[in-house]
Length: 175
Image (cartoon, rainbow, N blue to C red; front, side, top):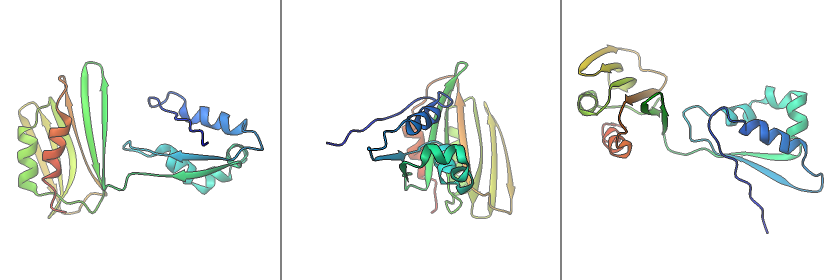
């Protein structure tokens, strides 16, 4: 029989701290594996555990020495993050540097998407497209250099159908 413990919680709720305490108290006769499965925009724990300088730190090394660390991230070239607070809902997408968007299709998506605000920096064929839409006021700027990655976020006072918006956004990709 294999026992599995799933640790979940909001950002800053103490998941990593709990994990470090559990690892420090792990019985010597047990064999543990830690699966870091991050779906957020920023892979904090995976990056932390993969950094040799952190693992080389004596405090962390003592806590991690008895566990095998497996970092398992999504293989997709994009991530989605949802957020809610202060009366607003937000959804953001992050795409890798190789993902390129059709400028016209993307601008149509931005114009028709619901939201109080849409902001982003996207990789297009000619470089970068900076987007800032507040209500009906849309400001764009293009640059010849492509961004390190593409990211776009919708902020709205209403809960939107993020899956439909995502489906339409993904159709704007060239590659």
